[in-house]
Length: 198
Image (cartoon, rainbow, N blue to C red; front, side, top):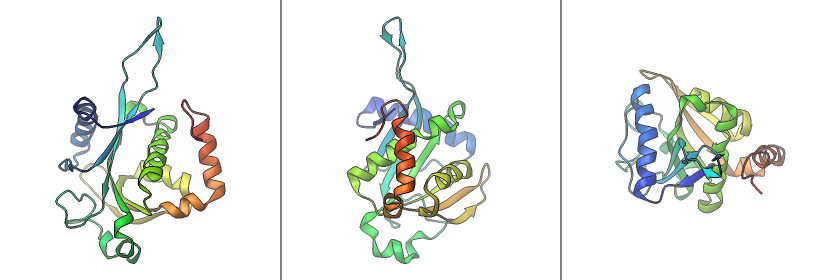
């Protein structure tokens, strides 16, 4: 379903998915932060004559500790929303993570495969305990996440780009985790998929 990028081979797979999509959408391909936490989304493996087919990477996501002064910061800068002035962000700087390099190959941009990102987010939430995620994401992704997490997702600004619009989004992780109805529905979706989530 997904893997954390921990070696060169996995990183190369990450680049091979992210960079063509980035180029096609005419997005700036920001440098890779040395301390970025990256994940590859994987197509579930199928057995073919008792042999597992090669694992195909179908999507990527990167998480970065938010530091607006860092050269690797992707959510702030020229013509971008100023997250760093928000009271919630200022008061919780050490618990704010950027979402970056979020993409899914076009052939897999359906609800089934998109929900694989929720496994990654939950893994990251459990491991790193963020209070907020902030990011710039395609409208399609924003709408799917908003449908799943409701009021925990706040749209700050729509930024018109050369290819697609990007939505400046703040995700209140603690609010989402406290919403028992939304979390129950999310767990049900994840448990119905290969690998599940307990």
